[in-house]
Image 1 (cartoon, rainbow, N blue to C red):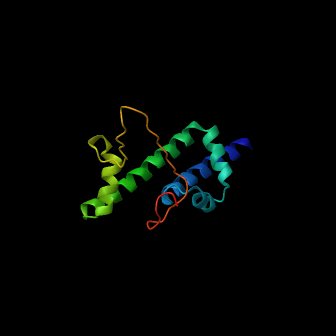
Image 2: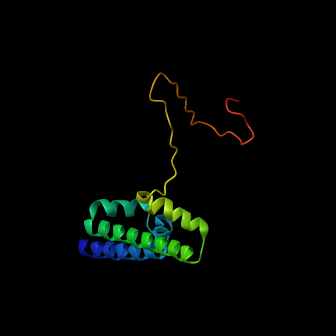
Image 3: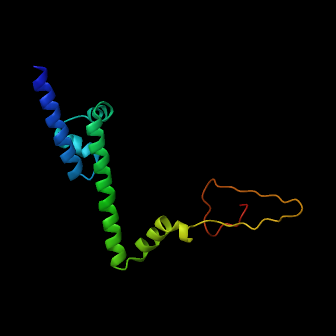
Amino acid sequence: MAGGSEQSTALRKQAMLKALLATFGVIKMAADQVGINRTTHYLWIDEDPEYKAAVAELKEVKKDFVESKLMSLINGGDVASTIFAAKTLLKDRGYVERVQLGLPTDGDFELTLNLKGNRSNDQEPGN
């Protein structure tokens, strides 16, 4: 009887992989389509190296899909997509957002940095 159970599990794993592909890796949606619990999917990843590798490959497929859509938007002249790509892909060429501080090199200085909270544009610093 164990052979039948193993065969059933293998079929469900294959169905899950197909569902993950169809849902672009959204685990909850894929698991619902196959009729399994998300926990089962994670157990399979932990227990089956081949299944884990197949899931990892699907993640790469998803990344490739997203990247192709981004490139299509860039080719179409979408400015926001072009800026996003430059900031994430071209950091080595200086396309990064960063704050550069010129601090005194002689004497004492005090630096206060507050990263908490949101201040509206019309508020004065310190208020």
